[in-house]
Amino acid sequence: MKKIVVTLLAALGLVAGAHASSGGMVWDKAPDRSADMPALQNGAKLFVKYCLNCHSAAFMRYNRLKDIGFTEQEIKDNLLFTTEKVGETMKAAIDPRQAKDWFGANPPDLTLVARSRSAPGQGTGADYLYTYLRTYYPDETKATGWNNMAFPNVGMPHVLWELQGKREPEFKTSTAHGQETHELAGWKQVSPGTMTPEQYDQAVGDLVGFLQWMAEPARNTRVHLGFGVIAFLLLMTFLTWRLNAAYWKDVK
Image (cartoon, rainbow, N blue to C red; front, side, top):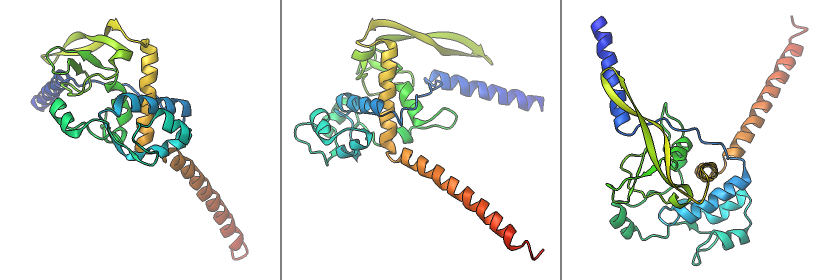
């Protein structure tokens, strides 16, 4: 029995070591901006400016952005490319063939990315995106010049680097079960961006909030309706219970 326990502990140590060496890390909790209209609007602007050049949102139409407070004229003036119409879907500006040549694969559609990237035990898709967009660092060994702590060997460059600036990760070394692991201890700012770290985290939170809303635009409506339905069922249960008691009172 003792030998089995030791073997299991060693196996867990190997898994943890492999996870750490492959860039595995704890995801930061993303702020909930699903009901914050100004934040969602700012996130939509950031998405169009920095993401829509390469990534599509093929299941989202521009006119659906009215749900987060934009008017049709604001959509036309601030979010549309010159050849597009309000009723069209949000398609990437890049030629798919060029994207494949430059990045090795077509950039994925982002309509549902906030739902599809969740992982049991680590967090939601929003947590992943919030961590991913804040953990880029320069890496001259990569074709794009960038790498990422949440997605090692990522093919996507750091499109928000002008906002965040350049940072380098700092690690601390620890040994567990005979395996040496390197854990992220913090970040060193190499060159500043146009935003402070706090402002950048706020902007990324807005962008992730928009991606989360885009993955399920009716989420807030669904939640509100759910509370109403539950309240109605509880009321009907109470009325049924009292009606049943009144009906059988004389029989008993």
